[in-house]
Image 1 (tube, helix red, strand yellow):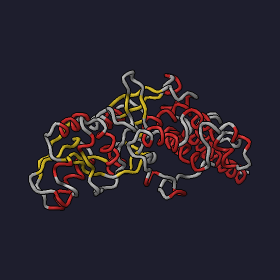
Image 2 (tube, one colour; image 1 turned 60 degrees about the horizontal axis):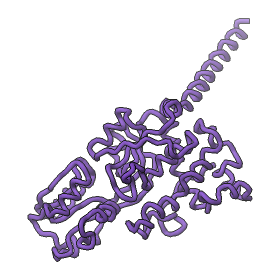
Image 3 (cartoon, helix red, strand yellow; image 1 turned 180 degrees about the horizontal axis):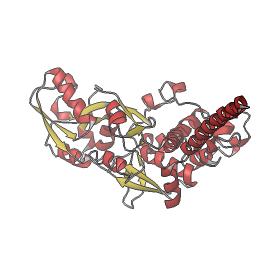
Image 4 (cartoon, rainbow, N blue to C red; image 1 turned 30 degrees about the vertical axis):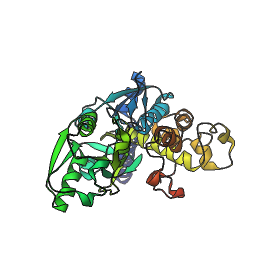
Length: 346
């Protein structure tokens, strides 16, 4: 009898542990951020203070850009409406504090993914929506055609508190060139200072140089030098500690990229529901139950594609068609010579 009692107690202990693990797994599927977002009825998104092509507001306060579209994709996924987003413009200095303090729930603001940011300050980068690199802009009449023409004593305009500032320092130090940094908190202040002649060169990501050049008094008076001095993988960021929300933002971006790979866009997504390709059917919600894994309904990815579009559509309307960077370069799909490659939604 004692033997059977002992065995029963052992089985009870096993079931207790299994039950605890099951409860823990169920708890892991719950997201405080998702719950609060659905309760409020909008996604809180931190963006730049105005970078054409990426996150920029018009005179009526309507935001557009590839970074903006990431947040709209999340809204489409969790709320069924891509327009249910509240945008908060943030400087480079403010952006991480706004996220860690809970003022915003997604930072989608041309932010470089680095080890220290990912590991040290309570942030999680969930993907890359633009591969970039840092460069320099100069005036055509300066006679400078390459960074090899830089001489000691030049002045450089830059955003304070950015990887751009650190990369610039490393670059000039490695070249043995002394320089005067002219720093500002806001991007528009940097552009205005350079445009008014307060510095000899302006440095930031090359996409930013192309975008900010459009704001200058005489854009054709300036050139971007050919050299790229850094790797700048830019992408959306969330707070650490909410793995479900992290997955939602990651896979909202992934859906946009993978939809382009499979030829699904905002116009044909409905017709694709009858496709013979299982992967296409999963992306348009006609097969499988992928939404359940994220705590969402099964139209989440279909809503992203129909309301925001695939990555190629977003790039075209925000960056290519505006003349900022017509050539996608590394931001093309891996099947077309670029490096955009995401895990499959299955």
